[in-house]
Length: 106
Image (cartoon, rainbow, N blue to C red; front, side, top):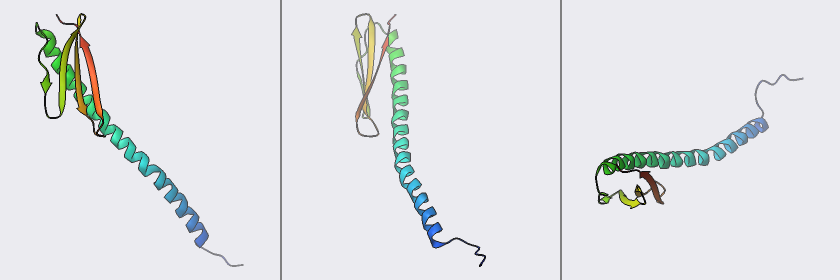
């Protein structure tokens, strides 16, 4: 009997195919997770901007005019007793996105 110290070609091919299967499965998932992370980061940023603008608008006696920039639009309107502030933008995936907050004017 021979004492072989090493891997056969068949063992190497099996391990390589398992490794490639894992890589081919994980790469699209990582790309999707990264794009969703960017979308959520944008939502957090725009929610913070809307919150700050809504706090300023709630202190004024009348609803302020809309705020237009190259990246987003913030609109204010009175609904019953509440001031509604909405921000609209195009997200990382090039889809329209919107967040609305309500506040009670003083």
